[in-house]
Image 1 (cartoon, one colour):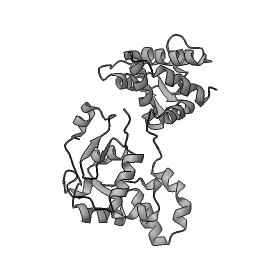
Image 2 (cartoon, rainbow, N blue to C red; image 1 turned 180 degrees about the vertical axis):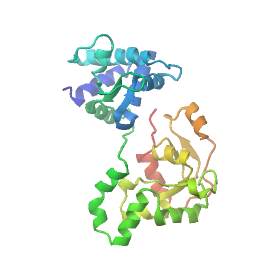
Image 3 (cartoon, rainbow, N blue to C red; image 1 turned 45 degrees about the vertical axis):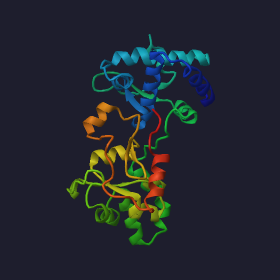
Image 4 (cartoon, rainbow, N blue to C red; image 1 turned 180 degrees about the horizontal axis):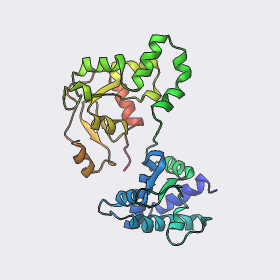
Length: 277
């Protein structure tokens, strides 16, 4: 097993190069890290390097080349019997047992590589826990609450109950677009539920009422907001993607934020927003 420190040293050295192949390699590596479960297909790796690369072969060649450079810097050879560039990709990943629907490789990033990226500050640390994981992690805290508060706390995790009602009362519609079709709007936490105590999880100033596209981008740190309500787009949100999602750089919150909102929004910018390219 290769240590985190060895990966850090190799990645730091390689980051000094500015060739297109190395830049593409880092783009693919970061995409691998950000994918749910750190699992990504060869086709998606190619698109991460360049949106014009629609063939999986680009990932096999360029990701393999990038991985080989890292292996050479560590004086490491993957202990697998695979021909060509694919062999070197095992320096960074393990191949998933199942291929994608097109029969192409899927890669799971090695935990040591993920940790190295985080410690070097090349990625913003992400937490892929789902609602069930969050509820399980907070079970002890929830059990200490009175039954009514426990229910309110758990409902707040999925944007329901009095937390959602308080956001509807304050915003009246989507906090960005003003859309008043309440049935499709989502109660989104600024400070993520998993990081909140009971008060923070259920208090109105910790939330925004958002359309699903804005909620997903906000939850994943692809957008955030300044204290004056102006939207900020992550450098990871490609212009073509933001266009498809209808998210524009001139958007802003429809109402002014109170002083009670600001600490939660500042937490989102510091801990959730993906400021790294």
